[in-house]
Length: 228
Image 1 (tube, rainbow, N blue to C red):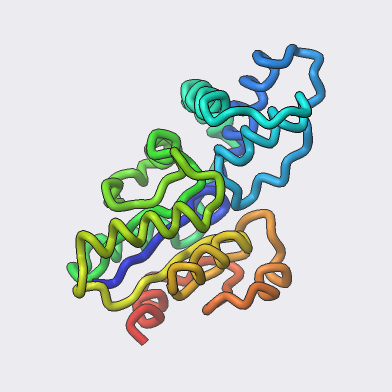
Image 2: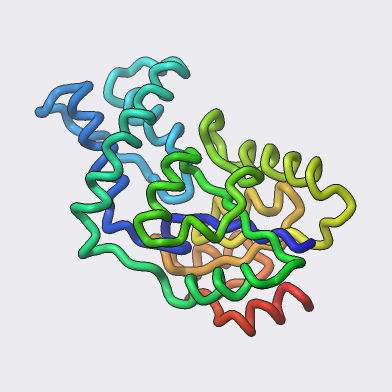
């Protein structure tokens, strides 16, 4: 079995900043309409980390886990509305749907998620593009209880090993940020990096991914890649 872990934002889809708008809405409800929103470098970070740092930088006191998780759940309740508002500015990246459809038909490939979103947040975003049906959510990696991407990746591969055991031949992580490359290496995966998000190709190259592309290759090329 070959496991392909997909990142979501910047790798498969661009939501037109729906997530950013949804988080900022919640921040202003908590801190007041006039509160300055701290700048957080969000690309590749988990939702928990982003919400934690927004509260920390605004208050000067590190929030509790309960405060962070409450913030994230409120953000998710707000997300569906913003996905609809920004749909004219959103899109699926080149060759994504084609690859998902192609590998869905391969019995020796499992398509999973490795994302900084929670399970609910990931499902909402993918459903907005009709992509949620391609993934095994039960054995994917989500950030409900994790702040650092490396930790959710370790948890995900533990679950995969418990399920597939000796059937796993190769593990691949597809992402658009240095954090995707890093967490892939942490679990011994072959990292496929695409410069479709906020990071330039040169910045991704510095992290030495296994393979680096401007955009996701077409399905036949991807198939040859994972079977090389």
